Length: 217
Image (cartoon, rainbow, N blue to C red; front, side):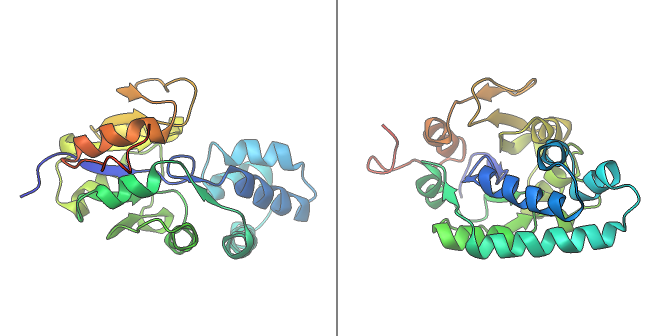
């Protein structure tokens, strides 16, 4: 029986470099409403879409706002330029099945589409925006992932890049590591400047090892 922690990954900014695509989509969405794209994107980085709509277009129908955003994002999955961060493919391939999951504020079909385009393996469990009533920084997404994996929260390692995700993992009572930022976010238990730097340590926490060929230099 495999021993070690269960690994719960955020997606965008942690495993997948999608910043340019996200910015473009929100700029296109903002233009449809005659708004400044940079201002809207700054709000979108901190909140879920429904909360962004309430802040930037309070008089508009949230369902119509979301439908437009979904249409733009679905098109972006087909045509956008995505890349997995260095170390992601080898790390995910090394993790034991059933011991890791994705916990994302995006929607599952888009995440799977991006993973298919970049060749990343998809785990059995993806907790997405449609899975929960409360998104990050609420602990609900990470607690749901632990529950569905049959894991105690204390046996889970969260890998994040964003402050809201860090707060979510900490509130869930989990160990939280940050990657792909120059400095650690407040409260994180450990920090790595890149996913590649973190990959061998994450693998060991899960009771796995990266092969010599796959391990970053």
